[in-house]
Amino acid sequence: MSDWYRRACDRAFNLGLSIGELTRRCHGAVDRREVVEAVIDLEEKLQTGERKERAA
Picture 1 (cartoon, helix red, strand yellow):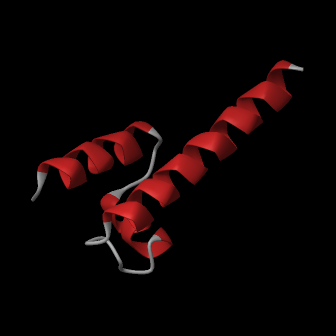
Picture 2 (spheres, rainbow, N blue to C red):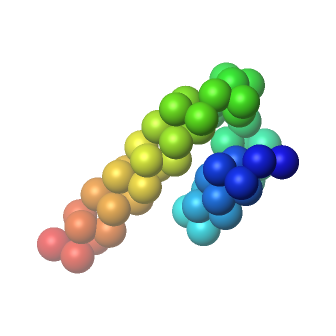
Picture 3 (cartoon, helix red, strand yellow):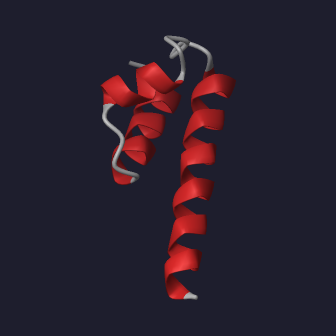
């Protein structure tokens, strides 16, 4: 497992995503760094938006 993928998995886990869910959301392209990071970034933005809505 490469360093960038390990960090990506840690970020995904901290957002509540399992490795299986991350793989599903990447449509299996877990070897493509830009795809994995885009999926995690999107999830992070979605969760941040939900927190802002709850706070309002």
